[in-house]
Every structure is written in structure tokens, then in C-alpha cells.
Length: 541
Image (cartoon, rainbow, N blue to C red; front, side, top):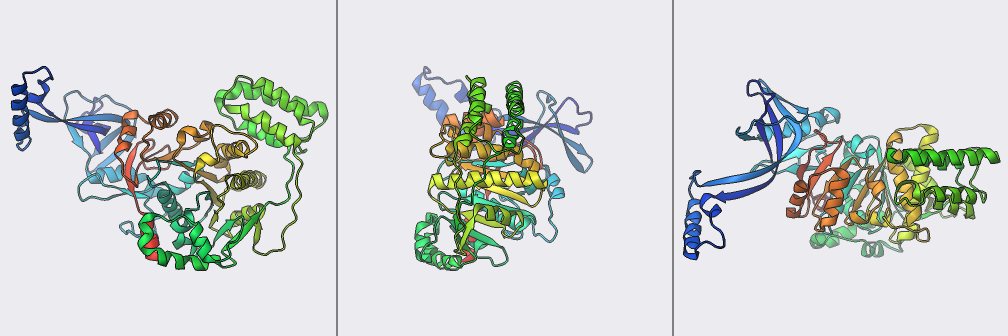
């Protein structure tokens, strides 16, 4: 809930400082004077009187204490209209605090976004995901359901994260965002890395919609739909319609809907990859990166190496030199020398393309997403090492193609569910966590320039690569019971602890949304309830 207090810039009661309510606390004058040392009978008498007082409206003895946090915006009233201006103005001490009305809240959160997105032919009051592009509602007032909209292009292009404890509704929210992207954008294609096998069920309505080209890809093709159904995760709440869901799996086994993935012939990495990665590091590493880049260029010049030449055994000397330069560093360019060393020693495999027409390579998948052959591709592989390899190759290939072609569209969103499997803080090369973390961080740093977006979804944010997390511009935060997780979010995303503490009261499907550029008012926390993805499944099967 939001409050407004007249501030010192106001000349005729027209300018107010806005605050987000963090906590409310009932106070009674009599109880305030009672301590544990007070005479016991007197304590009992005051308490009994206080209980009776709460049934009255006696403001002389009772009040509601409201703790608020400024959101660094003013509301400016101009006749019948209102505007919102960024900035902090000190409120007038002792002034009344006004609660923003339902209409004012809706204008604040949605007015700018509705001008930016296409709502032609949409029914913004509908509960149907096909008709309404909202991502959730605010139940701020009794009986009121204020819809919340976001700018989908900015949400994708500047990346977003979904963080909540197990059971908080992460997969439900992600599937609903994917559903809205497909229904309400024309030039967005999505590649999902589904290591937990959840999204086939949660997106059954999309996968079975013949007007939406989609594909399920795995490392093997099940013998029949019954085995595929048994291997997929289904929410407990859908148990009453399990038989209908099972029947809905049957069409998914069709040849054009389900394919097996394989690795294409690998090409050696070029020296240009090293330079491009150095260019992408945060400005706080500017001095170190400058020194490393100079060392790389001198190494190449001394050996007559061009940028497009492949990294070979000679690069072990370069890796050793760069490793010495990064000694003592914990983050940033410290992860580059080991990967250069690995690339210099790798023997590239040659894989013959299978004759099976139901087989598809990562290269082909990337090309098909580039050319909008598919709007949705779900990579359904439960082996973490295998799916990491595919994630590395897909992320690198997409960036490489976009850099060479200078294409911005169609937008391609890569969804990394159970992100702790892809971008952990502690990595090693043997299980491909080092390569995966590096490739995805690189995608997040450079992707926005080429129309490539990332979604990071996890319940273990404290164990993720913080360099990758810092690239996210929008984030949905659910219940996080571990204090360290909340402290990390407060540090990375600059959210006040008082606001994050409110997430402990959330039930499944309730979220704190904040965004630098995808919401109607930047960097202001929004408490919303997401639509339930299971409703769409119940209607579709």
C-alpha cells in the first residue's frame, strides 16, 4: 500500500512525497506504559481495558503506527490529473498521510506501460491469458483487483530473475510469463532449459495449440506417451484431472513435436572470443581488464595471430600469463584464464549427423529459433551435465550469430530453470559448471545489444554467480526464509531490508516485483499475486 504526504515543494497542496508501507502496528496508550515490572494486577486491568477499547473508536488512547519507506517519487496533482516525478523531497512534519486510491495506484503502475505495449483488441478485464497481457494483480483494497502490466520487450532484453523457496510458485510464474510472451508478442521466441521436467505439464495448452509452433527436445525419445507422462513432474493440485492430462500428452509424441538432440561438429574457439569477453566485464575491473587485453594483443602480434584464428596449444602460455595477472581476484576476469587453457588443450570432436529425421542438432535449434520456425522449444533433459553442455553451445552460438548478422529481432529468451545447476558460485570444468556459468554470464552481459534475453529461476540465490545476477534488471522475489538470501538480494538489487522482510508473509504465488525499466514506475517495489498457470491447463485438457 502507498501513502502520500505533502512536501516542502508544495505551494497549494498539490505535491506529495510517496511512501511504501512496510509495516503496521496497533498501539494503545495504556499498554505503552506497562512493563514486566509493573504491579501484576495493574497489568491485567490495563490489558482488559485495552481489549474493550479496540471495539471503540477512541483515538485518544489508540492509534495505528505505520512504518513507511520513501520510494523516491513525488505525486503531482494538476487539477483532475496526476503525474509522478522521480526525486526525494522532505515531507512536512506533522502533515496528514493520505492513502493512494485504487485509481491512483493503477495509473502509477500501468499508465506508462500501457502506452508502450500493444493492447489493441485485448480485453484488459478478462481472466483469459489469451486476452489479457497482465502478469498478476494487486489486492491492495478490499474487493479491488488492480492488474499489473510490464513492458515485455524490456523484460526480455534486460533479463529477469525469479527467486523463491521451494513451493513458492517459481515454475508457475515462469510458465505464465512464457504464456503471456507467446500470446502477446509477435517477435519473441523462447528456449527453456528444463532440468526438472516441469514445464511440459505447465505449458500443455501452448504445446497442444496447433497455431503455435513448438517443440520438445530430449536426449532420447520415449517409447510411448505413457512413459513420457510418468517421467514428467506434475503439480499435486492437478491430481484430480491426472487422467485428462495424461491424454493431453498423447499428441506430444508426434514426429513434428518431439525430437532427439545431438551435438554438431565442434569448431575451435577463435581469439576474438577472448577479446569480446574482456570487453564485457564490469567497469570496476577496468584497470585489470585493460592490462589483460593489452597482454592478449601483444601475444597475438608477437606470433602473427589474427582475431579469427583458432585458439591452439600456443595459448597455454597466454593463459599462464593472464592467470598470474588475476592472482588474488575472487570475481570478474579470474574465470577467463582457465577457460583459455582448456580451449587450447581440447581435441575437437567430429560428430556425424544421424540419419534419423527425428534428430536435431543444437545448431539447427538455434537457426530455427532465429528464423521463428518455433515460438517455444523446451529442452527436457534431466542429466545436469548434458543440459549444461547444450546451454553452453546454444548461448555461444546465438551470440556469435547475432554479432555477425547485427540482428536484433526476433527476440530470443533463454530460460534457465533451477539456475543453481547452470551458474553456481563454485564451479569446476569436469562437470561443465565452469563453462556453463561463463557462457551464461557472457550472454547476460552482451545479450541485450543483440535482442537475446535471459531468465534466471532458482531457490538457492546465495549459491549463484553474482556477476551473472548483477546483469538482471527485473526480479520477482517470493518467500526466502534464509536471511543470507535476503541480504544478498538487498545488496545486489538495492531493495530495503524492511521491504524484503514482508516477503516472509507471502503465500504461494505472491511476489515482490521490482524493475529498473520494465514496469510503469522504475525501481519501485510492487506486491502482486500472480495468475495461476494451472487454471489454463484445466481449461485446455
